[in-house]
Image (cartoon, rainbow, N blue to C red; front, side, top):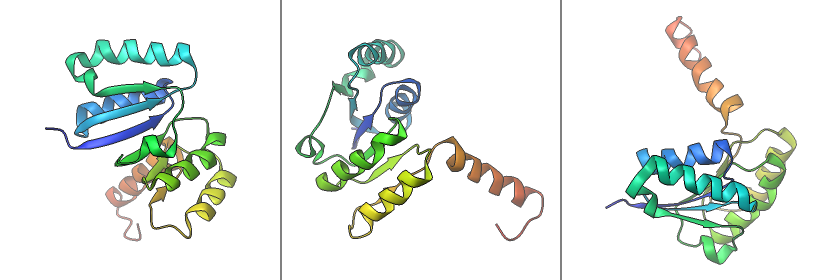
Length: 150
C-alpha cells in the first residue's frame, strides 16, 4: 500500500512530469493536482491516465483548494508560476503541510523565508533546475575532479 499524500499546483509540463514521478517513484497513495485552467487540467488528466494506466486512480483534480483541503497531505509541491508561490506558501503553512517549489525568483524566495521564519513547517523554495538541480550537479562534478571544499 502506498503511503504518501501529495498536492501539486500546476498541471503544465513540469507539473505533469512531477505528478508522474510521484506516482511512479514516491509511493503516492493520493496526488491532488490543482490547476485553475480547465483545458490544461483536462489535458494533464488524459496524458497521466494514458501513461499511468490503473495507477492514475490515485489522482484527483481541482481548480482551487483551501487549507482544509490540504490537511493531512504529506507534501505540497508548486509547479505554478513563481509569482503564485508566496500565496501557495501561506496556504500550505496554514494547512501545516511542508512546501517546496521549483522557484525562479530571489524576491519571492525572500518572502517565503519571511513567511516560514516563525513556523515549524518546512518550506524549501527554489528547487527547480537552477539553482536546484544545477547545484547538485556542480557539487558532484567538483568532487569528481578533486575539490574537497564542496
